[in-house]
Amino acid sequence: MLILFLSSCAPRTAQGEAVPVAASTSIQNKGSDTIVNLALRWAEAYQELHPDVRISVTGGGSGTGIAALIDGTVDIANASRSMKKEEIEAARARGIEPVEHVIARDAIAVIVNPGNPVNQLTLEQISLIYQGKINNWREVGGEDRPIVRLSRETNSGTHVYFLEEVIRLGQKDNKALFSRDTLLLPSSEGIITEVRDNPNAIGYDGLGYVTPEVKVLAVAKTADGPYVLPSVETVNSGAYPISRDLYMYTQKGAGPAVQEYLNWLLSPEAQKIVLELGFVPVQP
Amino acid sequence: MENTSQRSEWVINLLIKVSGYSSILFVTLILIFLLREGLPALGVTPLSNLFGDRWYPIESYFGILPLLFGSLVVTLGALLIAIPFGIGTSVFISEIAPPWVNSVVKPLIEILAGLPSVVLGFLGIQVAAPLFREAFNLPTGLSAFTGAVLLALIATPTIVSITEDALNTVPPAYRQAALALGATKWQTIWGVTVPAARSGILTAIMLGIGRSIGETMAVMMVTGNAPVLPHGLNALVMPVRTMTATIASEMGEVANGSPHYQVLFFIGIVLFVISLGINIAASWVSLRSKTRAERVLS
Image 1 (cartoon, chains in turn red, green):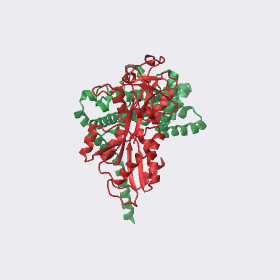
Image 2 (cartoon, one colour):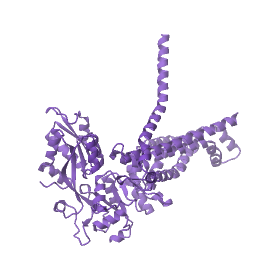
Image 3 (cartoon, one colour):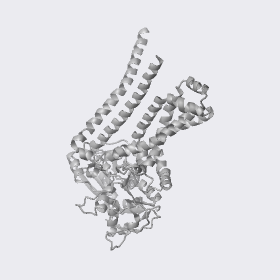
Image 4 (tube, helix red, strand yellow):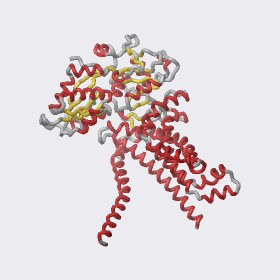
């Protein structure tokens, strides 16, 4: 938070301009709420190494960050999904050529209340639950309770990823949607709070946000199993089915300060922070 | 000397006039902006989609009906709580309570009016929602009802302060006459004082509605934001998504000029029209009662 405050006070330099070494450089970084904590920690660590660089980090969702990149108001957009075709076209129409960088990996944990006896689900069961075709925990081996579906808002990259890879099971021609009565909560914390308090709830969240107060379900690709819990090992081996890359987008021809920062993000030192926050480092 | 004071008077006059007329200017500019950004939605998005029953903008479903009814359900629920509560409180303050109680209650209501709604929303998530879920055995506490309770807390101070003003302007002679005719205190309040302050109370209710339908943050935090078209009375305890929460949570992601952007502004127009209607109704009510009072006096 302090960094946010400090950097917003720092003088801003025009984008893409060559900046003299002595003056402070400012990097605007905005987007995915999944990545925001990681980006803040990175910014903090990087500014300690390079006191002349000011990095300001804000959240708001992947869509928000990408929209800001297209509008040219940020240097780096954080996104927990890759850019859509329309977004790339919109950027090009404004003369911005987006460049994609994979900076970490994330597993989406499917979470329930600790009091819920259900320990594992298949992808198909999760899909049917979120489509509104399974409405009682009894149908998946739990108690006789209604299922309350929780999701992030539609501007969240996690929402879009979950729709495409879980609800639609990764099938391009599948037009299934979230059930209408899915609660759309504005933050990851909101989902954790409701799942912690409500024994009827099912939710999903980036592994980095999951606290010990909720129960993580083991997920299987097919009914034959194996049921796998999300972790660094299972994500990197590909055994856990719901994992994704996390991205930063810049524009082609971004200033040297931005390039240097992005190079540093892939260093072992920066990737150690990834691990500390519960995400999965990118393998070198 | 004479000249300077005249000139300064002229400047002050002008400043006062400018600030007076500026409100007209601002409202007009806002309206023009809303219409310019929002009306194209009618041309771009087919009406059957725009007034459909499904809101899922990332797949181009722009049905605003669930949002409209969501706002109405929450506002209605809030009024069912806030009107009796607010009128009761103001009757208590202006007719019954001893001065020392008033000196405690009135500042407390002012504090309630000044509470940021995000703080109420936070209490709603952490305390009210789990409480209501267990008390009423609901699937989830993030529902229209929780939103209505918070909105009632937000609308009550508005209703109380205006109703209290209205009760205070009822001439003391009315009360004295009623009491002299042998009416009890309760009969005087219910049969004479409150009806005499009717138009002020109606204005209070109208402004309470305006306050509720425009509230965003608290509602967004506790109503669950599920765009479900309500079926029947149990909609009051189910999750809903309001118009204001939709604009607030989606405005940040839309690209300027996209159909989604236009529809969000169209929702803004709908909200503007609703609050305009409420304000017109409120001033019509108070105007009508004023002319009647003039008739009686003449």
